[in-house]
Amino acid sequence: MNLRPASVEELARSLREASQSTTRIGSVDLSSLSCILEHTPEDMTVTVEAGATLANLQRTLAARGQWLPIDPPRPGRLTLAAMLDSNASGPRRAGFGTIRDYLIGLRVALADGRLVRSGGKVVKNVAGYDLMKLFIGARGTLGVIVEATFKLLPLPGAEFFVQARCESLESAERLIAAVLDSELTPTVFDLHNLDPSLERERLVPPHPGPLPKERESGTPLVEKPQTLQIADELPVILPLPLGGGEGRGEGEPHAGGSASTLQRFNTSTLTLTLGFSGARAAVDWQLTLARSLGFTAPATLHYEASFHAPDLPPPHRRSVLPSRLVENLRSLGDVPFVSRVANGIIHHRGAPQSERLAPARREPAGQQHAELELGAPSDLPRKLLERVKATFDPNGVFPVLPW
Image (cartoon, rainbow, N blue to C red; front, top):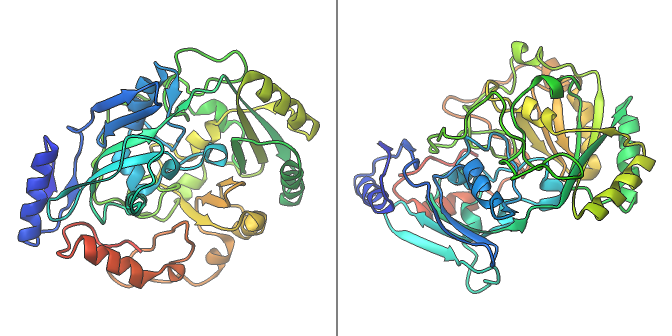
């Protein structure tokens, strides 16, 4: 059964009927539920229906000098429901965190049609169990998120990106250590091996939505789309696919990169990118310190947009201890990657060298492998996850657990 409700009440009725008849929901299209319900700039909070895209929300907030500091790939196609279902994030995660840090209220349609709320509309809200966190990253297996309330931040006065080329992973590791030992507090801290020319060739905007104007110092927080017009496209959000870039909630299960895909990337250059945002004086001070460490070239985040281009399948992801990041990158071999140094998250295309040398393993019929931030599937508390799933969806209305 595929649903495209015109209202939250219609969605609740459809779910109640599906639960009573033990019918599994194939997909839920929330494109009709895309309104900003309440924006209180003085309190820096916003309540919005979950079918709205992140890009449209950011444009509205930017007009009042505010933003939701989350920058996942493809914001023009990513609904808030999909972003929450997949715990999506992007390069600025190093400095701003993830969506769970800004979610203060949630409304969810459960499998039996009940509409429940958790949290509230004020920032200081600590009463009761924090059930909201159960739905973040649940891939639509526990309920349909229909409304969310977020706390916001002011748009930074300045933002600038710089980069340094590294001849080897060993030199990159030394430079990473120098940054960590310094007083720098980057909002972006990425290491990738993509061809620098990709930043000039790709026209996909890497940022969440346009600012009213460019900042005096550094690049604009958001760049205007040049060629790709995707802001009005609203994807179907259930069932959510497996894999993906920091939980993108888009695409299909995949192998992470075919031969033709890998030919697009030249992996001969290692680049360490830092980003700084905030008051102009603070950004300028950090830039001076970064230049003393060797970050002398200006940069952009176009490598991120290139790596997650709309015509490519979602990449593989692995999550490791930040202290073991370089060790794990070394095991990948020559495959293209973008890694979050501060968080230990690695996105890569193509099989690691060790897997290419090993015999191919066939998954049992009906099973597909999903990479999670918790690590390998064997690390997951499967019995606990199954109990939570059975509590919220006893009749199997929503997709099965992908793990």
